[in-house]
Length: 222
Picture 1 (tube, helix red, strand yellow):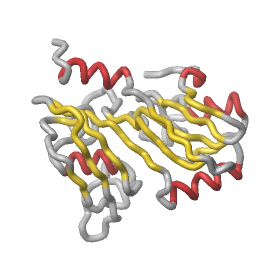
Picture 2 (cartoon, helix red, strand yellow):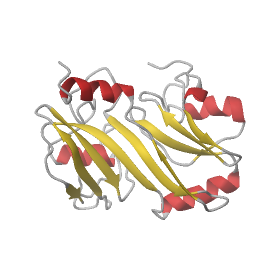
Picture 3 (cartoon, helix red, strand yellow):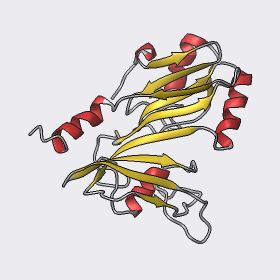
């Protein structure tokens, strides 16, 4: 559980329009709907910057790159980029079992969750497309790269579950555990700067939480 984190430890880049952070696993982006006392990133940033604008989100348990806007104009332009699919995002996932072949999953997802979980829905589901590429394959788990072509809630998690390779640690779509961190990390994001239009790409190495799992099960450290 992360209490009162110093956001400066997470800053990857900032200028007068945007701030890019490497969000830790287990930290909310926005306020919890049930418990207002749980720390969340927008509030932490607001204490320092004043008004701050959410552009996109990562699940609480997901770590990695996240962008906030510092003003309304930057927010509007960035949101437009995301809506048009002009922002490139890449994730690293540790999944259960041997994930040996690249695959693009195009299973439609339900628009609403049931008990917090989303399901494949062929009748009324929304288009969802994710490409997966094995990076390192082991007997118990594999490291996989994921590229999102659409942006549905829980898309990577549900598609991996449907493929028979749920995230190695996922309290909703794999074994129920108390640790709510997910073995899912946004390691790369590419976009045009909302003001000057300059192409920008940010990339981070795997989080220590996930690297420990890779070392234990994939790098033969034991």
